Image 1 (cartoon, rainbow, N blue to C red):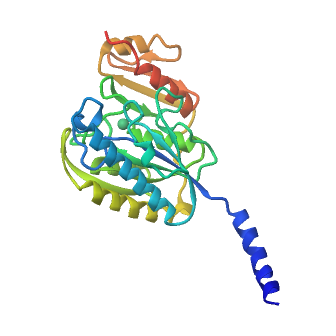
Image 2 (cartoon, rainbow, N blue to C red):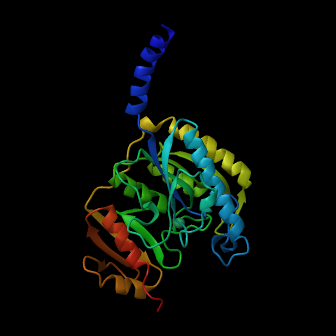
Length: 293
Ligand SMILES: [Zn+2]
């Protein structure tokens, strides 16, 4: 009799587990918006503190994963998206996540996203080129670009990548970075949970929390974000998309205007209309990769 009751109870439980597939969460990770990062000393293999910054970055990714999974199981894809895209210490991540590494790749900072994901999460993000007093504020290429406009509106990498996720119907649940990066994204997507790990003084200075504190804030922030997944909506830009790209060098604008579909708006800017966000993302990678004159 006891055994029979057990079986009766087990039946619906097993069905319930099968019906509820784990959430799929996409994590895009940059380095400029990680706790403690303020200068090139932390941003590339030649910097004296890069190896430490990789540990802080990896710590924030792990904190995000812990926060996501506090609310239940989740399939996770981590997209390493800074510099050479090989900064995250992949042997320090849980062994059931997958990692996107290396450039170039068609969807750049969002490679691997598709319509099966429940939400996108941005860790270590920074503000756009046109943001004053933002740590390492730039858009896609600090060396080459003055900025990017989608349908007339200047975008940060966060807003651009939100639009790319939105193309696949995936909403943005969370962003961490300095105060400017978080404010810039939340202005466009107020439902995204935000965690500020640095208050910038300028391009190369900030008041920052410690890596441990940043990780605790991110873990708690992701737990909050997972609690409101049902209320999120994808951020979509109207297509076809009017793209404007500003270049620091006039010769880059000159060469960009050789690309069919792009024309010169003025010395530093080109414009054109393109089908959708994946097309724009691929094009921008070509436009930021001209040989140095
Ligand atoms: Zn970036």
